Image 1 (spheres, rainbow, N blue to C red):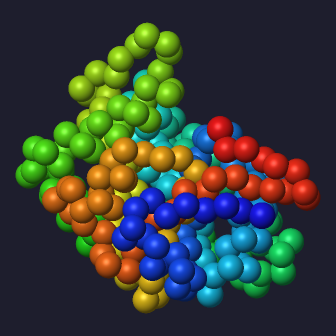
Image 2 (tube, helix red, strand yellow):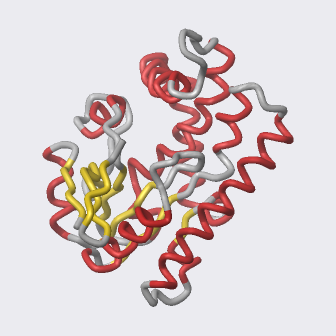
Length: 232
């Protein structure tokens, strides 16, 4: 069983429509075990007309680079970890008899060829470069990510933030307009952590708003084989 909570009132209708869900699966995040991914796949395939798993594998290299990895090594490590995550997703879908599981994965390769995603990505980058308030919120969200990865007591530098923010900018198109990225009339993005930036985004407090048919839901807990699996 999976419990979900709409992030804001604007997210209720897209969730109730049950047209589509996009489940975010972060590389290098220990929350996404095989059991959890299988439970998420079962929920998505049963409760929604359509579904995808978003795996920002290539973008993860920006976080690694900000943490001190050589750019080439960062790309290699991100690509290897991303493939590991994609394989887990595909294996879970195969176990559920979902045909052509790779078609349900939105990773760097798939999104590089997606024209609508690329237009949204370019818009987000322009907004970051041209709107100081929006940039400050993006950097604040990035600081939240890096703070969890750096040694205790170490603050991310401005250079680290501006490197790692490219990961966050790569995620934004899926938060604002998954319906047009995947070609559906309504969608919710599903993730297990509450992020202040996203609360502001879906409350229409930032210069870029999610489209009306885009929602966001928090995954509160997953039950696998009758046992509760708590979110961290």
